[in-house]
Length: 74
Image 1 (tube, rainbow, N blue to C red):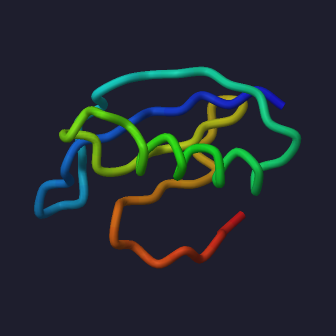
Image 2: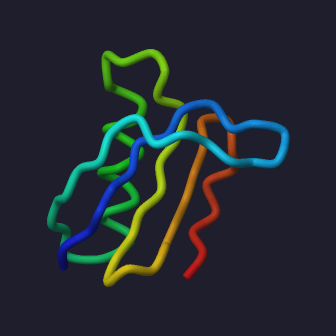
Image 3: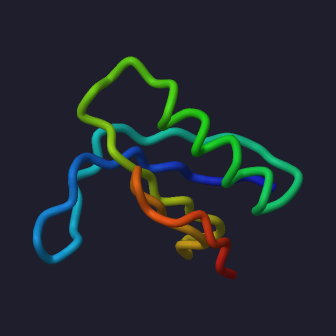
């Protein structure tokens, strides 16, 4: 499956965050894509990246910010 990954900056008070970078990658499942995206966020050298939004077929399937609980939601 192909996913669009939006790497996000710090969220404001309303929970909105600027998109720092867009990437596209493939993963076998949403769960695998979430694991890979978290690894990218936690290991990227860009200090402004604080989270991500994972999109498939134009719909957000997951979003996460550093410090947020790790519950997977469909």
